[in-house]
Image 1 (cartoon, rainbow, N blue to C red):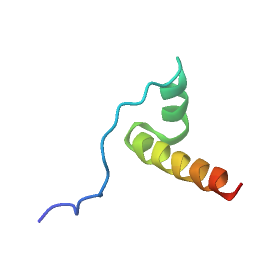
Image 2: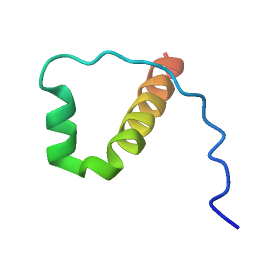
Image 3: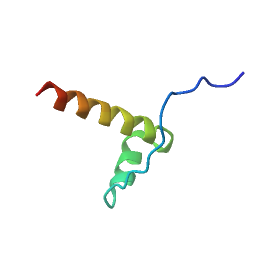
Image 4: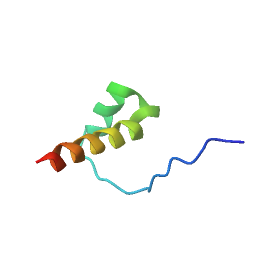
Length: 50
């Protein structure tokens, strides 16, 4: 059986120097993508409120 699909689309995002390391320090290597998805969703919601 396996994991259900996440229904996500892969994209390439260029982050500033040191940003990936800062994210990993906060959430760990395995949670980096999840952190970025949540941060983008939160920022979209914030901007859409305006």
